[in-house]
Length: 334
Image 1 (tube, one colour):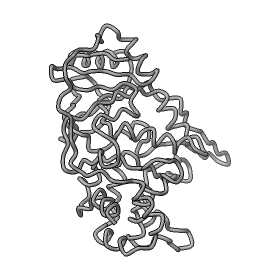
Image 2 (cartoon, rainbow, N blue to C red):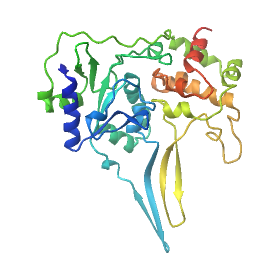
Image 3 (cartoon, rainbow, N blue to C red):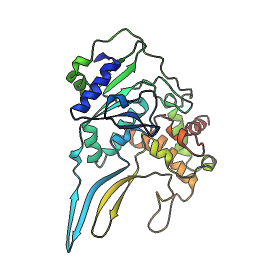
């Protein structure tokens, strides 16, 4: 289904959803930083900046309670957190590099164990993607086979038009239902051309060739060279739209507490630290090797796709200037 929506009507749609009790999450400025966060009105939404962190937090929070416990005398009560408590949500203005990562996460969280917390949020969330009209030197979505107009992961996709407003296209029943429920805000497509779209400068990478090299180079001098600067801070994993590692810990006292899921990262030195004291990834090159292997080999081995969308966040945030795109390009050129 193809439609048109004006900028004003998009704001009306957002305000209507908020007024009727729907949780609307979109890029907004918080203390000078663009983030995906719940809106109180459409006027808070921005569309000209990529949020510093990804949209995965709408489905996979940094910290999440999954159980509580209390002890009174000899009696211990354990209460599961109800995953059905999540509100209906609409994610608006999701960039293609974020939206395309969400189906990638689906494969992990619905694989051998179905994560009810993630899947319940997914079921209750409609994703409105938006094409990119700007890019910086860190963007490399085209290098990994995606584009500024990638529609995968979006229920409804918006493309900014030169004459103002957006061309709309639906890709799921959720997207069609959203348009159908607010028909007065949408009209028939116009002949306006799309605004000039972003053109990331990174060269296209042969991902099959990269994987083939990784298959045969678990041990290689490359790993010492690329990881010599890595400080193991984990920032790259925390801003990545596709990284999904987490730890489960009990927090509290003898009397009461919570069991929580907390984000984790393979770059942390304790990530593979055994209770025995042994750590199979005791040095940073081994940990950074795992990051590259996971994204461009292990995930592909298991699910048939690459665990990188080229958003460039890890490049921008790395305190020592490590560029994953440059590393993969180096492998590609071997």
